[in-house]
Amino acid sequence: MDYNACQCAITPCQLAKIHYNFWKENSSQRTALLNNWCAYDSVNEIVIPKDETIIFENSRELNTDVIISEGATLEVRCILALPTGAKIVVKPTAKLIVNGGIITSRCGGLWNGIEIWQSKKLGLAGIVEFANGGSVDNVKYFAPDTLYNNFAK
View 1 (cartoon, rainbow, N blue to C red):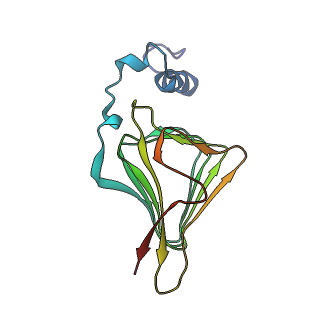
View 2 (cartoon, one colour):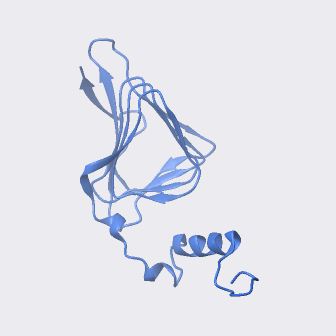
């Protein structure tokens, strides 16, 4: 506890250590968590807004799909865990960069993979890049040269 009169506060460093231990795969603290991130929610997807750049620098476990809107960029520099059945959609002109991170499932199953959408009208597709050892793991559909293409309007 913090060094104050009531000793009822947690320092930022102590809070960071708590979060770290919750995240570690085999820690005793992790067993105290309700793993609701493994219950796939197909309705409430996470949307990266049009023309914005979002960087995931701190690992996260999501329970839904990730949609990268047109012109938007999502850069993954950490562990991004998705449940069985979840997918990442890269819309036309959007970009997914896995920069030293890993996209995986920590729920015992396989996540569905990355869909790259292409515009019929413009012929432009989404882009997926891997840098600095970035990778995907525990994925159902993934072949870097034959990513799924879904044609959008």
